[in-house]
Image (cartoon, rainbow, N blue to C red; front, side, top):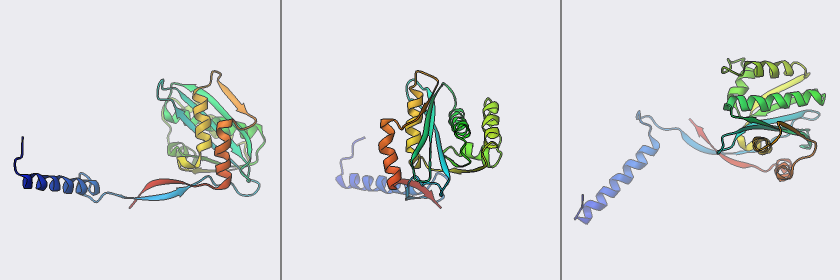
Length: 212
């Protein structure tokens, strides 16, 4: 269709723009869409004499292989130990669960008495805090890390945003690329060192969140 009248074209463009703006702020049911806000997110050190475990599961795009990884830090943000695991083809929840299980077992091996466990997988956080039902196929894994928690004197479990655990993300991606099953890092790998320094310095990342 060809519009020969320039005024008609301008009116049509205005109408399209107006409808697009309206749609951006209203959902398909005619309800007002949630607003978006920017918050600042950073890694926060644990209280004095506590440790923090951050874990994560990760997937490569092609091939879609999973890896897990994480690290333990003290109240100054100093590296204690890190780890990475090659998991293979699995689900998101299973990858997150493997990473958590390995981190808990490492805490036990290091005789860490008090630890904050922080991860961004809300479903796994709910498994731990609310005793939610777990997806099929990972029952033994869930039982393993729940039993492991009983061997640590004091544990706090909390959700965090992805931007607060960049070191764990990097280690999990490294896990997906491993040729062996599991590795413990006595010292931070070079690609984690810079991220560690940012965390210790308290550098923030911006994140968009929905607000009512």
